[in-house]
Every structure is written in structure tokens, then in C-alpha cells.
Image (cartoon, rainbow, N blue to C red; front, side):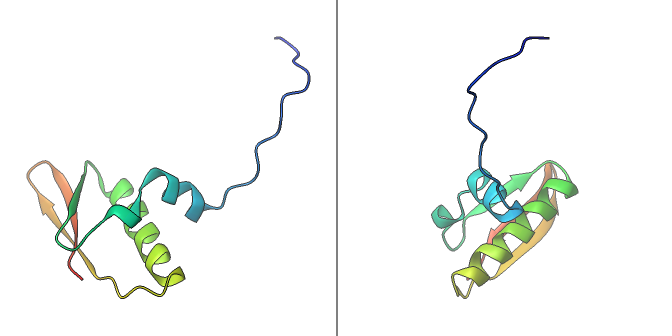
Length: 77
């Protein structure tokens, strides 16, 4: 174990901020899609998109479908 001094403590991040930094929703346009490997990641992304669009009062709609390689979500509005 090594003791270190003067290391700054990062600020708290909400789940929304954490997911927003992971997923850049502002770049998601109508008819764009994202492929996820598993349901857990898909659900995180969908929750994050819903939060993002509600906080910014955007009229976004998304759908998800199981595809050959995983689960894909599309922005349709």
C-alpha cells in the first residue's frame, strides 16, 4: 500500500451524468441506432435517453428490438 498526498477528490456524479458522459445523446439523430450486447446495458441506455429527453423537454421516441447480435435501439422521433 502506498500513501499519497494532495490527490483531488472528484465531484459526485449522478447516474444521469454518468450515463450522459458514456452515451452522447445529443449526437443521436432520428433513424440512428445503437447496438447493445445485453439487456442490462440496453436498459441503462433507454433510461438515460428518457431522462435526457425529459430534462431538455425534447419530444423523442425510441424503440428497441432484439436482433442477431444483441439488442438494438432506434431513435424514431
